[in-house]
Length: 507
Ligand code: BG6
Image 1 (cartoon, rainbow, N blue to C red):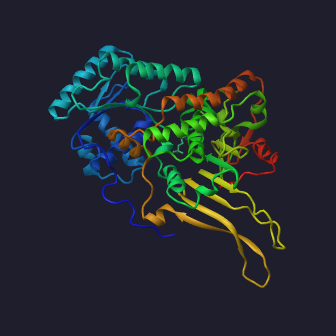
Image 2: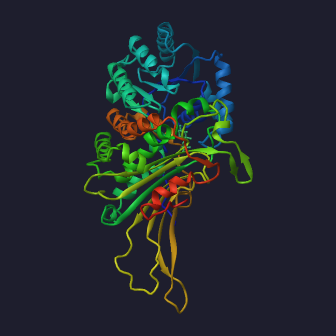
């Protein structure tokens, strides 16, 4: 399918005024791989304002030069914003600063405040500041409280803004998410707070809203009268890599379902908002989470499956099991796979199951939403076994949308074959999708919180997964089903759908 001209004008709206970004956790992996490359992309498109400063803060002792060169090396090898231009990088890097410090030490924040004022006055940057928390979540409370104490949570100049981006995981259960919200909201106002879920920054995820609410043909079908069921798959081929220590305390339910997969669910199910602004969109998304039927003990047993990868193969390559990964307990019961069935108790979706699954070391990397429509009410052809119509939204990596339907095979017989009509982002618009982090940073400096999570929604998502966590932690002695790395998860996951007379649509 051919598309139109693609994005017109600059790729980012960005900030029109100068700004300072303070990046906590600046020596960490996320900062190197995602956040700094995204800032570079914004900077070279003039979306960090006419002048900017990026001040890194982390525990690792390091000189400013070492900080710049470490980030440069990382960005050049792993950037997801396209090739880094050495000259543009040098110009960008001259705005990077670094200061090691302890997150809980108030003196470090007094020093930080002083340094920011010096840098800002030497570069003629007003008071616009963005604090980005890309640290381990345990230190979020310290940072927030210290920012408050050092007077950094309020704008230092008239007509300027202070925003704070907080990375996921936002809490590890409902109680901790509530406690964190309270701490954050004692220091900042909700309108200053940007809880990031990078899935919302993906073009293909936002396109879900455009597909539904920018076109007349899909929405009339988007309900219980026409949809048989929905499947959302977020599968990864990667294992836990170097994050074994973190993952042992998280697991797939916390790491992926509570955030990314429930975000996708909300966008598939959401009612049309009154307008595309932060309050309207987030109000509607919250209603979806509030309409999902809460899990009780029996529902967890019936409708939620967990699994853990055992040794297996990815293509030809043998790969170890989860319990053999670095920093993972050899008897670990942490789940690396979750599949579940949700029911949304509202007028649009009553009775339509939403099957969700996510896992590491699965057969293929793919994030996909599959809407399966009801079959035609009566088949007049001799061939009765016609495949159902499916609308597939491929979020990544082959970004696009396809619709499948039955078509007559050529020939004298009335024989029906299943065909698909495809839209591919790259072919249609002549360019790939943007880095999700760049999109979200751009929105944050512009003050647009539409694609960020609100405190009440984060809590609503935790209140859905909390009962599952409780059941699993009470069943400590229960074995976690194993699946070979490179498969589609444990057998129990297939059984979940087979019981309903359905099967997974494997990307
Ligand atoms: C992160 C999770 O939020 O999302 C990781 O912590 C996961 O475990 C990652 O690998 C997946 O993101 P993406 O954009 O690669 O699908």
